[in-house]
Image (cartoon, rainbow, N blue to C red; front, side, top):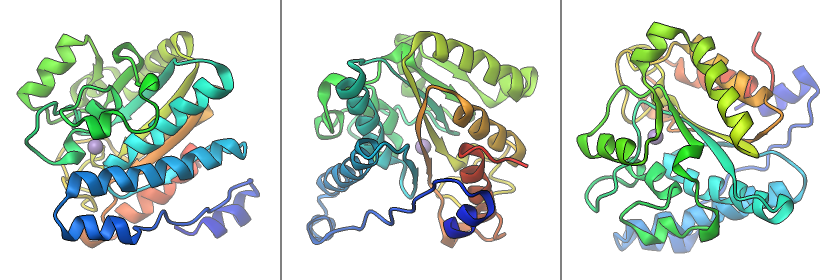
Length: 270
Ligand SMILES: [Mn+2]
C-alpha cells in the first residue's frame, strides 16, 4: 500500500505494523471447515494487534480483507475506551452498501458483522469477542451508503431505531450535509468515534475490486470526504478500510481508491 511513500510525502508518524498473518491454528480450522471458529480465532489476533496499537498510544487504521475483522477492531477500540476513559460509549460509523445485520444462522459471516458488533448476531462466539461489556449500543451506530438491504436487516434497523443514511438520501441531501448531521450527533452523544468503511459502498460500476460490487454507490470523491471528515474529528479513534479484493480489481483503480481513502482518513485529501 506504499505506506513508506506516504510517510515520506507527508512526514506523519505513520507506522506500518505489518499483516496480521493467518497462523497454523486458523489454517487448520479452515481445512476442517470450522469457518466460524477460524474467523473467531483470527479476529482475536486482530483484536490483540489493535489493542497493542492503543496501548502504544497510536490510532489503528486497519486494511482488509473480510469485513469480519471489524469484530476484533471495534472490540479493541471499545475495550480501550472502557479501560482508559471508563466509558462504554463508543460511536461507530458504518459505511457500506450492505447493513451486515443478518441476525440469523444462515449466510456469510461478513453479512453479520454489524450484528456481532451490536451483540445481536446468531453467533455468540462473535458477539462475545473482546469484552462483552463493550458492545455498541444501537443509538451509537450510524449507517452511511446503504443500497442493498435484506428484509430481516430492515426489521433489525427498525426494531432498534438505527439511523440509516442510504445512497438515496445522500443523493437528495448531499454528502456534506449528511456528514455534518452524523458528526454533530455522534460528537455530542458519544465519547469516541470509529469508522468501519467497506469499499463496496463505492459505486461498483466503477470500482470492481471487492467481493460484492453494487452499482450506483458512493463516488470516489464522496468516499474520500467521508474518510476525511471522520478522521478529522477530535473523537476519531480508528478505522477499518475493508473488503478490497485485488483479484477482482479488473480496472486496477480500486487499489488507487483504497490508497486515497487511507490518505484521507489520516488527514490528506488533496
Ligand atoms: Mn460490509
